[in-house]
Image 1 (cartoon, one colour):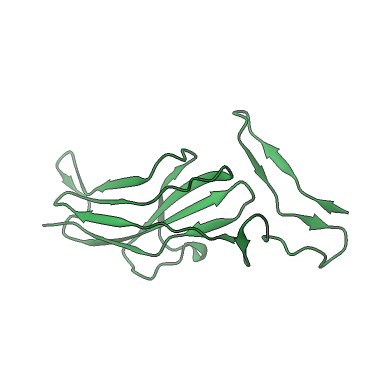
Image 2: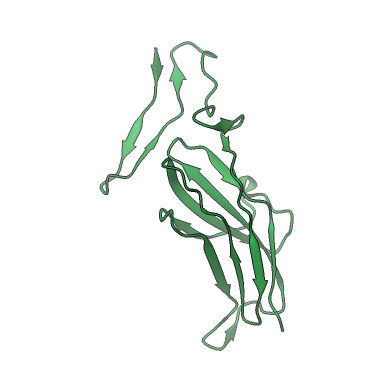
Length: 144
């Protein structure tokens, strides 16, 4: 037998588990619908960024498939940060598939939270099967 669990939330959003079997090794979990080994999706982000004095800004091609589940944006001061190892800070988490740009303000109400710095970002997109795709590291600078 093979099993997939579908979880439905109160807003009728849903997500599937990986396929499993009662026979150990019969199914490689994560290899579902366009995913490559390890449970990752293949998608092209095509990111562009712009430098401003008080914020960072970047945009990307949206993930236009019907199996979209969630978009996350992670930030770090390290260029080589690894989301899976708990490095970086999750700064955006949304189920709105239409979002394809982001602005991170460093000066808010006169308080400076990091202008004149270089920030590094990664975008992660999950599908309903639990697979994900990560962008390359996005480097953004803010002016002084």
